[in-house]
Length: 335
Image (tube, rainbow, N blue to C red; front, side, top):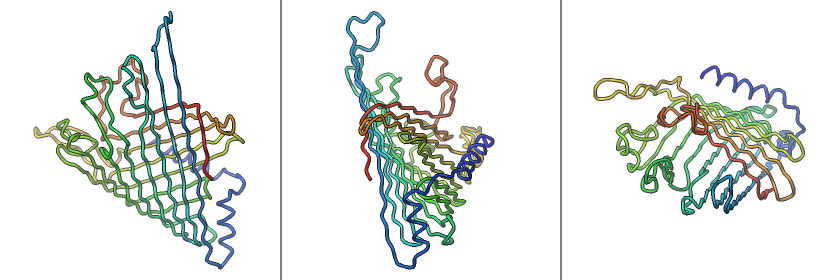
């Protein structure tokens, strides 16, 4: 695990050192700002909205299949940044939601995607001609609606998650390397992470839920945090965005049962991962094709080997959580 993390971090750092792209509008502004004494303020914003839809219908089809289905998905990614001399305030909002309707399920909607992810950072430039900032970060994650295990019997009566259950808040102080709007690397040796959930979920199992103990509604961790973002225009119509987060809990330790045996193994070296990737191809002014993937490793989310059968999609991933969505649809950019 540590070897994989080291390799990924080195790869990200290499991309920073080997990137010789032309100056973006943000970089040009920062360069001009460092050479002036006037109190200049600038707001910069950008955003992308993707909406996709898929529909299918079969009748007397020899090969078989779902008689009728509809899939609807939406994704929004936006940024709002304020510059004022050595000060920078950056905000990123990522939203996604998707539903699947099938005739075999009486067109009762099933979720394909559900995410709310907001990050706000305030940075103070350490030296005028350098790209390093002393930065404070706040991140909030949750989901819009209830989640279910659709493989369970009577799943509609057994929600496994909901809005703010779980909800995650991370507060961190550290240093950030920022190259315009293309690259940001943030490292914090002191980061607090809080997890929230309703007792409706933490009482479902003796071990609790989402890392929260049985019957409780919150959990606090203290550790180190790294977050990196990279945006690259591969060609005129192709853009690649990636984000990787690592978190290690200094307070992590094994959970013991009443019989004195270890119920769950944990230690500070058990690092939580989040890796987002979004590849977008602009087919026309309003039509685009996108491929989004998210890979998560979190020791606090239970894993049952029985649910990793060789016949299921993604078999062999074990503790890893993976989401992949391919969309052809409408795109609108905010500038």
